[in-house]
Each structure stands twice: as C-alpha cells, then as structure tokens.
Length: 365
Image (tube, rainbow, N blue to C red; front, side, top):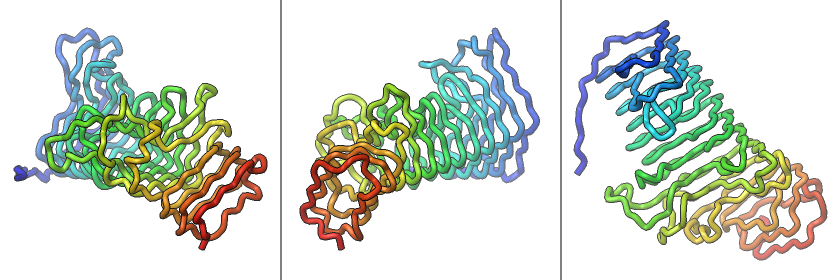
C-alpha cells in the first residue's frame, strides 16, 4: 500500500536577487548558495554562479529546493559546477517540487545543470542549457523557445505530457529514457516547430533506454511503456556523415519479449529534412514492429524532402499526405488501410516517377 508524508509548508515569501556567486580554486570545502525546505512561494532572480573549470570536487547542490511549491527563477546564469563527466553534481537540485518556472536561464556544466526527482508542473522559457532531467516520478514539463546543446534531456517514470515548443537541439539527445531506473512509463510527447541539428552520434530523437527482460518490482512500473509521439513542423538538419535518423533508438540488444505498453499513436505532420538522401526510420531495431502492434499512426504528413523505399502504416490511419516534396520515393506500398480518407496526390511530390505503386485494401473513403 502507498505510504504518504504530509509537509506543512511556510507561506512567507522568500526572495533572492542580484547575487554574483563565485567559487574559486583551490577552496578546501564545497560552498553552496541556497537551500530551501518546506516552503511555498520562492522567487530567485538575477543570479550568476561561477565555478572554476579546474575544480575536482563533485556532489554539487548549489541551489537546492525540497518539498516546495510555486517557485520562480528569472535570469539565472550557471557557469560550471562541482562535477565531472563521470562525477555527478548539480547546479540546481529539485526534490518533491510542484509548479516551478525558469525564465531566461543559461547554464553549462560538466554533468549537466539539473538533478531533479519527483517534480510536477515545470516550465522552461527562453532557456539555454545542456541538460534537463527528472526521475523517481514526475509529470507535465513544458519547454518554450529553448536552446538545448551538447548533452540530453533525461527522464524516467514520467506521466502527463512533455512539450517542446519552438526549441532547438544541437549535438543533443532531445529525450533519453534513463535505463538504470528500469522505469518506462506512458505519457504524451510533443515537438512543435522544433529544429533538430543531428550529427553521426546524435541521429535519433528518442533514446528509449534498454529492452531487457528485467521486470521492475513496483507494480506500476512492471510493464515497459513508450509515449505517444506528436511531431508538427520539425526541421532536421544533418551533417554530411548522417545517413539515417531514427525516431526511437534503444541501448544494447533487444531482449524484451512482451508488447510495449501505452504507445498507441505516432503523429508526424510537416517534417523537413535538410538532406534529401537521409532516411527517417521509426526505430533502429528491425523486428520491433511486432512489439508495437497496437500503434495507430493517425496522421502522417511529409513535407520538404524525404527518401523512402517502403512505407508501411497501421490500419487505423485516416490521413496521408506527401506535401510539396520533392520526395525520392521509388516504391510505394500501401496495404490494409480501410479507414484512409480523401485522396493521395503525388503530382508535385515526387522527384521521379514511381517504379511501382501497390495498393491493397485501400478503399479511400
């Protein structure tokens, strides 16, 4: 049975502003800036934090908030933390927090700026950061006009929705499911008006953790789930060494023998590739389709330039459009699409005439 804890928070307004915080080298002790416990209504603004890049300490929690509600951070700049590439440390650590907003934050750290657990309702507006994360349950994250670079956004046991609106990802994994928690939950994932600058080591949108036959002992986490994905107006720019881009990529070998849960829809509307010879795939595992047998692609609209040889869609798809192109598609196979509506217009969409068009059980209502 669930065990709950009640926190009686203080409502007195806490305001921290106009602080320049420098941690010099070689200081013999770790120095933190702010720690807030059991509080409602916290405002932090115009704060800069500098940590010497030669620093070797770790386990940073420069700004730490626990058991808090209604927090606002404006104009925060974090340049370095007590951390390393393999030694954890956080510029901002949030634990059991509800309703927190970051406006115009810039942050770069070796381990990444955030270390969050059990956070619900978090908003990032016009931020430039190299990592966002949340673990041990969380829900509802909104990123607007943000620039993400060099690392990844990492989550586990997340519910509700994650929305990226007008965001840019450069040398970055837009979303990563942290495999060490073995906590894969269902939620709604949105990318709207986003740009993904991909290279050979960052050529996938979702790094979907591992698919091992290891069952989480918590009942609510015993089934491995993936999110529903909604992409609208995304541009993917690729370097010359990128041949393929994947929607989902898994770590290591696939061993999981059960169907993947929750995911029931992949909607892609207006996706543009900078290089017409780069192919977009749903997953980097060839036989994963048997585990996604309940997925319904409700609407697929391809625009810009896209290359494919075979397009296979689930039976419940209702809308299919190829946009203006030109698309380098040689063979188009459409089978068992009884709910497809309207018409398929290829007059201005293809680079060259199709070599083969096959339609089976596609009445086009």
